[in-house]
Length: 191
View 1 (cartoon, rainbow, N blue to C red):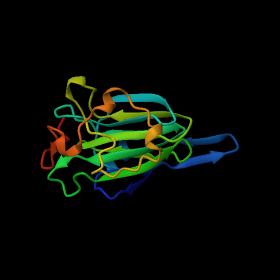
View 2: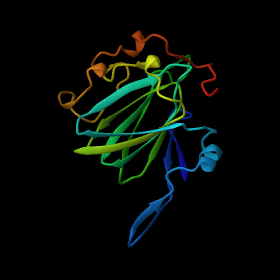
View 3: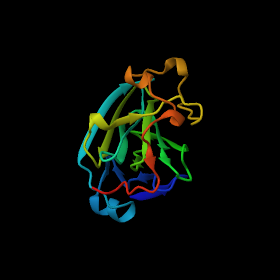
View 4: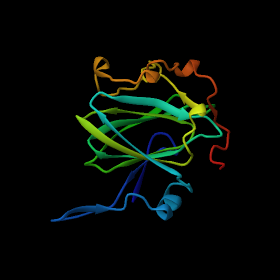
């Protein structure tokens, strides 16, 4: 696997080594040994999958400590714009984001560390999205910020009138109004 750095340290893209022949393709989608050696030591405990249609926007979500989560995300079918926003107060990149297109064709994976809000918009008719988490889902520790916060300047690559949101995702605060964000100095990787 090839690790590609982004503009925010710790947020990386992973490009798998793909083997193709007349039968199709094969690639190793995850190796604990390689991930620990090339990205960081981590212990994933939960895998999730969702299916969505064009215009669905999920995010920008996070879990608060002590249930903060790192995520390793990928698309099996279709394409999304995947976004990680630094919400670590005191971070030199606080409020900045990285946005990448993930698709069933490019096979890229995106690693989002703890201390980041995460979301994606669906760019194709349908998408199947998978992700690994290094902490279990804890609904009482959910947090989120508004997907359309003008201070974030995210171009979701779908017209605002075509965005499909859950009822919950319609009512998140702006980043400047969000309570209980992460502190940059915290050791977010303690288990």
